[in-house]
Amino acid sequence: MAERRRIKHEATFEERLAEEAIKFKEAAEKQPPGSTARELLLRRARQAETVSHINDWLRSPGLQPPKALENLVSDQKK
Image (cartoon, rainbow, N blue to C red; front, side):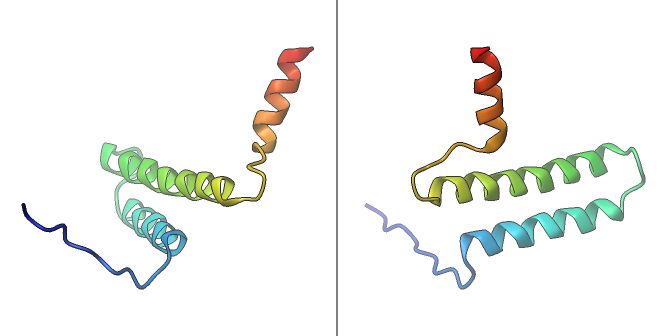
């Protein structure tokens, strides 16, 4: 059985996500407005930011739901 390769990251997960989002935003700026490539790069940047927010939420004490979800749930109960 082959051994799994292990990678020791020097930056934290949050730092790597932030760097990825910045990298995608910078690449998107180089594309012409409205192009498919630009939209895909901006989508990837938003995804990295969303993952960062979800990770913050998962690591928070008590796993409190985000405020937007609390509002949505309270609106549905009315």
